[in-house]
Amino acid sequence: MKPLTLMYKSGILYTTISMQKMISKLEEGLYNIHFQQRWMEAQTDPQAIVNESMSHRAIHKAMFEAAALIGASILQSLPFETFVRTKTWNIQSLNLLLDLLAAM
Image (cartoon, rainbow, N blue to C red; front, side, top):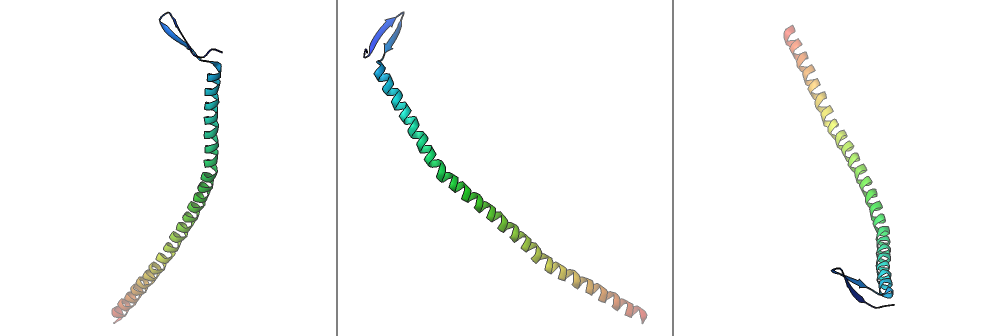
């Protein structure tokens, strides 16, 4: 195995690197890729747990908001119903009073 040799042909500089050096560079690159894959796998599991809990929280929050809106609608309808009854009673009383006045 030759270490590093430089050759010059037709205006181009060629280099030849020993096979051992190329193999060691490839091994280092493979190790880095393997390390990054392991690191990403280690990050994936906790992130999946966080995502699942966030989705549960979002569903619970949406259900709570829906219940709150339904409750607010019911609470608004009660005073409105009382208001309508009062107005209806006032109009009936006024009609009765007008009828009494007309009869006199």
